[in-house]
Image (tube, rainbow, N blue to C red; front, side, top):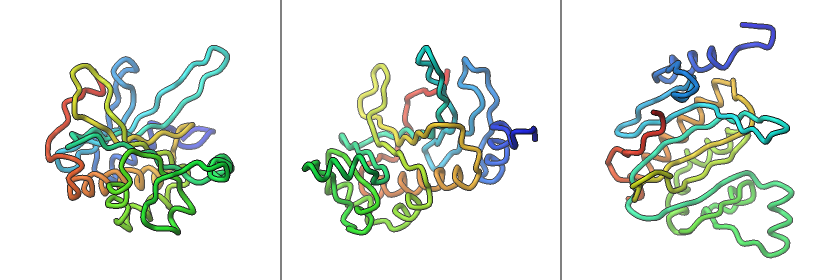
Amino acid sequence: MGIRGISKKETYQQLAEIIDAEYIEASVLKGGVRVEKKHKIWTIFLDTFTVNTGSSTTTFTRVRAPFVGYFDFRFKIGRINIFTKIARFFGKQYLSSGDYVFDDEFFIKGNDEERVKDVFENDQIKNLFRDIKRTNVTVKKSRGRDIVDEYEINYITAGVVKDCEILKDIFNLFEVMLDTFEENHIAKDEEAQIVLYK
């Protein structure tokens, strides 16, 4: 451990051991340092990426879990903030989770409110979202050539997250979400073919 505390590499090694996942140390061209965890037929990936705007660079922590979907189901969830409060004041409509207390804490945008309510009937999912302080999770279409019915659960936050408890909660959230998607016929019991690292 250096002057700045635990490194990303050490964090990922510890996390992999805690959650029984695989720690991978690859070159930057092959995705760099990351953690991969198998959950049933799905794989959950943790890594970081950097965006260069020309004048500055920002590193983001990212967790992804590709899955094969039965139909087009997308949503985004985040914590209520001043901007979403203003948007609501001016008439912006967000989806309901079916839980009014949860809806006072989080906003949800998406294309299928009934399916969203099915997902958020699971109290474990709601509690895990509450435990993760920086919440920015999206269920979206996977990008890639010949990708037709593949989607991914995607978590992104600015900075390098080095708190193993937070990262463990995110992996746990993804596992519960994938299970819930399968139970509600959102995700198929089928391995996604998209290749995230080459």
